[in-house]
Amino acid sequence: MATESTNTEAKSGAGKFIAFALIGLAVLAFIGALMDDYEGGLSIHPMDQFVVSPLFSDGPVGVFTITNATMWFALAVLAVIVIMVLGTRGRAVIPSRSQSIAELAYGFVRNMVEDVAGKDALPYFPYIFTLFLYILCANFLGLIPGSFTTTSHIAVTAILAAAVFLTVTILGFVKNGAGFLSLFWVASAPLALRPILAVIELISYFVRPVSHSIRLAGNVMAGHAVLKVFAGFAGALGLAGIAPIVGVVAIYGLEVLVSAIQAYVFTILTCVYLKDALHPHH
Image (cartoon, helix red, strand yellow):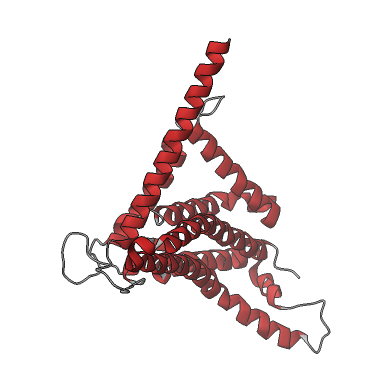
């Protein structure tokens, strides 16, 4: 028994050592990748990481040019397929780690849709779940050193937000007809205020896709830019750059949290807009 306990402790210690070693190597690789484009001195270009460039040539970017954004967009889609298709292919009673991740994500978003928009919103769950997984995977992939974050570009997030806006608007008229316009008419307000509130509600409705897209792109872009700035300070200070390096590691941890939160916020707002389309009456 003592031998078995000793072996277990030894394996546990070795596992912890390997885990910490891998984390340390990952941090060093991350710092090196962030600083590799600084030639020396305080030369910081945090926005260069958001430049869209051709993947197989040095020419201009055309309509059908395959770019770094194209590749990372495809990798995010591939990550979703790996999680939900390959990760659940066994469908075991006792799930594997990959199946557990897929089931947790599925249950989390399904409960969100049902709690926020109601059970009659569940037929639209696949669309909302796809949005959540894509944004989550794109955000996490964007944290890999040297990668490209597609959700940092307003062109991507605006398309996602516009698709949500058009979907819920069309659905609102299909389900409720002209009754969907009651969303803008606050019947509980005093009669004199209703026209003014209707104008405000109408403006706020059409601002939805703008705020929906800018919130995601702005938060992701800001976090990545701050990471680059701290990495630039670390590169300029050399051996004295321990404080910026600690800052980079701390901000990186914060960005992992922000990546998940922003996927959640985009998804729950989609559920709120869907609820308005299905139940427009104030």
